Image 1 (cartoon, rainbow, N blue to C red):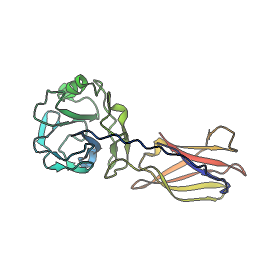
Image 2: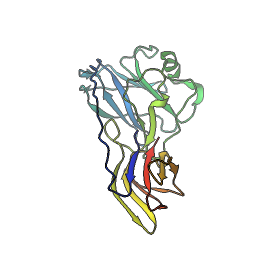
Image 3: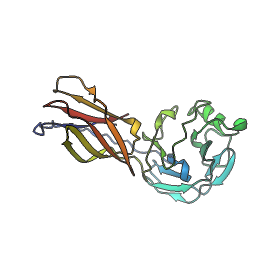
Image 4: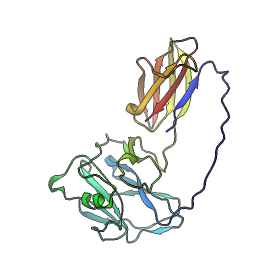
Length: 248
């Protein structure tokens, strides 16, 4: 995700950029899990394909418990579902049929918490499909937070790097950061920003001129205000100070 930069003084002219756009025709029936809010059992699906997909035969599989997805999902659309999975530790599998041992019929896979008794999930299928490493579980998100897909699926290869934990957001992708207000008071920069990333993912950096390297800001304080809003404060240390807030 690109860093957001705020420069002081404000008279610095932003450079022009040339953007090149390449269009790749989307493939058919590419439905993927793009968000899981564990504490509310909410799951988001997105259809990355070029045609509507009938989900009447599609199945959820969680610790070898099964339920029908149902309905349809239009090309390019997202839909929200409630799935009755274990909120402490579970896998979540999306299948296009009830052939649960089939790597070709498994469409997506994610798991969180810790290894559950008997290892009765479908991790073995995801491993054989080449999208998951055996024994890997995401940390259980805190109440009200989500696991988000952060790159456009369908990703190739292992999927574990394709997720981050953040505030819930209906729809894919999660928007970039946006500043609501910026100012200096009492020798401190004070930013209010909208960011769906968790506090621990944010980094404040400064430099005294355009040629100097970026350095971590001294003692930044980042406070979550709820619903993806954050309050960022850090010292204004130079007469000319270039500052940026980035996430990774």
